[in-house]
Length: 257
Image (tube, rainbow, N blue to C red; front, side, top):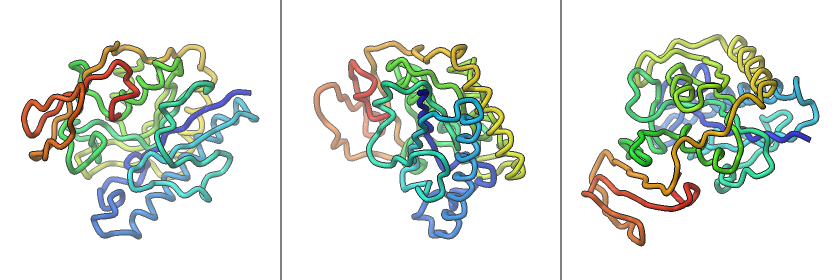
């Protein structure tokens, strides 16, 4: 039986282009709840696409948005995961898919672009390569032998995915016009595109290799937007200044990615 892992985030669905829809601290809880419904609809479309090809497959869905971006009861046909970092334990899965993905911090005209934290992080650089959440997690999957075969989100996130995994299938559900601006597909059209593209991705499973393009050992440089307390200390950790830290590990899964 085939098994698939869907990694989700809240910034990428059609209809989401404001941080008030993704950050609880901004004080608009009703907007966040609406955004969660938009993401669930697109995740369910991805699940439907997978099941068009593999009706009996196991599909696990991880809610990867920091404060929470999905409700378990909104998922249809997938197993909801929330705790921990299960994408670091993908042995046995046939592929990784992204739904609701955004581009890395600093990407021009990419809606809601950031890398792990929209409020504190300026950039991540792994072995000299600027990366965002997509490349980090695609690499983590790749070193486990699991290919990343699909991404849905904005056009800049899709371009970023193709940079690292040229063979990947993408579904562009909105075109970025700025940090909080985008042109969106209609919800029904977005879901149709995701369903068909996810089905094509699993049909092409054998044509998409695992991403292993950044080889170990690994040094992750994190640049921060503001001075830090520098309280993260230990072996393999070097502070360049109060806004820049480098963390070295042999296994990419041991980095804060």
